Image (cartoon, rainbow, N blue to C red; front, side):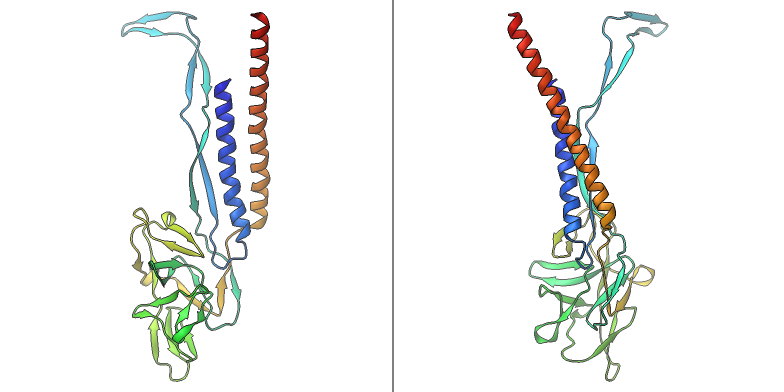
Amino acid sequence: MVRGWYTGASGMNAQQYRLDAISNNLANVDTTGYKKDVAVSKSFPELLLRRMRDDGEGVNTFGSYDVAPVIGKVGLGVETNEIYTIFEQGSFKQTDSTTDMALSGEGFFAVETAHGERYTRNGNFMIGKEGFLETKDGYRLMGENGPIQVGETKFTINPDGIIYSAEDMSEIDRIKLVRFDNERYLNKLGSSLYSETQTSGSAYVAEGNERPSVVQGYIETSNVNVVNEMVQMIEVNRAYEANQKTIQAEDTMMSTLWSKVAVAR
C-alpha cells in the first residue's frame, strides 16, 4: 500500500510539470518567435512478480529451473525525463516595418548581450541608440562584421540577409545567421533568447542550403496551437485527478487496515 502512495504521488508530480509547460506555452502564444515546450515522462523500472512455492522446481539437462508462474508486472511510478523545445516553423505575420524580419527555415539570429552572444528567432527589431539594429530588450543584432549599424539610412534586406542602403544600394552588412548540430538541446533563457550547450554544439555561420531565407517586413509568430494545448491541459487535469484518487483509495485502505488490527489486538 505504501508503494501505491509513492506511485500516485510520482504521477501527480509528473503531471504538474506537464501543466507548467502547457501554461507557459499558452502564456506566450502571442510572443514573436516563441517555440513551445513539451514535458516528457518516463516510468521507473518495473518489477516482475512470480508466485512463490507454487509448483516448485523443474529439472532439465541444463539443471533446475523455477516453474512458478508469472503473475505480472508492478509499476513503480513515473518521473519527468526532460522538458524540450520544439523548433517547428511558426506562421508569418506581415508588419510592413523595414526593421522586422522573419526566418524561413531552420536557423537563428545572433545578438550581442552582456553575457556574450545569444540566439533568437524573434525578428521584431528596432533602431536603437547610435543607429544600431536592436531587439526590444536592447540587444544588438549581429552582422558578419559585428553589430549592424544602419543609422537613419533607409535600407532593404535580400533573402540572403544582405542589407543594402536604399539610396545608393551600397552594402551595409550581412546578417549573421547561425545553426547548431543539435538545436533541440539549446538552453532556453527567456526573452526569446537561447544559448548553446555542450550537447547542442557550438554555433556556426549558416551557408548554402543550410542558411534560412530572411523575409523583411514580416515577423514569425509562435508555433503554439491553442486548441491542442487546451486539449492537453484537460488531459493533464484528468490524469492528475486519477492519481489523486489513487492516493485517497490507498489512504482509505491503510486506515481500515490499522483500525482492524487495533480492534483485533
